[in-house]
Length: 293
Image 1: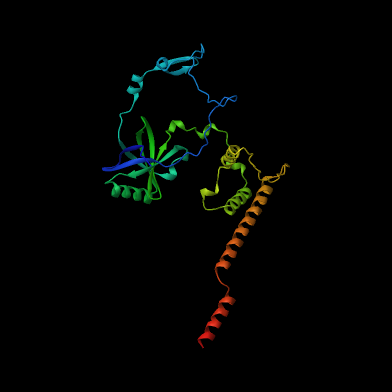
Image 2: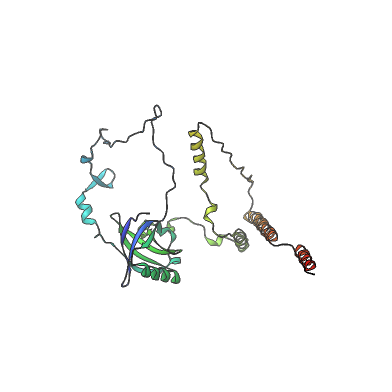
């Protein structure tokens, strides 16, 4: 896995040589636009909106639309003047508690890997962040752009997560949201019981992209000149009548209890299969004593 950034991670007077490597992989299906008649790929041309004529790259400039149909041209010199001085150092300026950070701030994760000679300092920072439950906050210039960055611990790795700046988040006060006073204590109690009955350890492998899987089945079938056999799972029938919230909660809670009972029964059966019965063990012991006598 090639590094996409090399530099140093610093906190206080400690400097750690590190490399940034990707922590995720794309899993999207790509398509090309084709001409239906002969399946020739479609090319896109840069044309003028006023004349419809193609425009060569040498005649294209970048403009900021500050009003409808009104632009100010930004040149390469303008971009250079606005650029922040490039640096190969990611300096942690603050440590904050992870639970204090709105999850919407986090955007794209990358692995931070120690370069030669930085292993001990890397491990020291990792364990300090782990023990304190903190996130290191700093800024990094990557691919000619400045980013806000958070340093977390995932397993034995330090993870650099590109973060959004405050002005990129929409304030929740702009939304019309229901007040908690609408919820009755009995409803809340039953809802909490329902959540508890459905609680499970997080297993990300349980959740799959069914649309992507179906689409790949269609593609593979068409490659063989066949038609994919996609049988949708039957959906549970829903009662269209208006039923009060408490009734729905009770029904959901009953289903959750049944699911928990089935899971407990399965676990007990598995335990019995692993453990020999007392009667069988007793008979085996008696036969062994007879042989010894």
